[in-house]
Length: 172
Image (tube, rainbow, N blue to C red; front, side, top):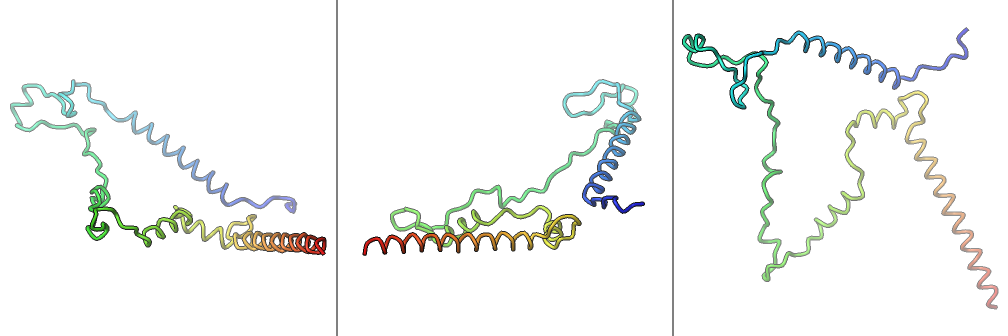
């Protein structure tokens, strides 16, 4: 009756719903694009302003731009990142050679060994807690990996101890 039916995968369901939504949006974009009336008058220079007839210039002093011409979109830029770093004088010794900066070295090493910041921390927490059905939680996987490592180290230590013991007995 339904006993052999597989459980629905929430991730694939969400992906399917998003792809359907994307297809609907693309169809709407095509419909709106076909409705858009493109001006057929020649353009003036590279500004995108339309040339107007002499009659329309008599009535108004400013040229009228079509609705299709829009303002540009500007991004926020952090000027602190663009400006070159100024070297502090206390970072150099009396000969002009840069001093060894141990804390900066430790920060760089720590950043090399730490993983990159996640783009979606809520998803990481969700996966770590075992919130997705059918997937094991990350804490379980870490525990299994930790136990394997401990058994490997113990086995290797016993083997090395046996080899060392045999070498010592062979000398006597």
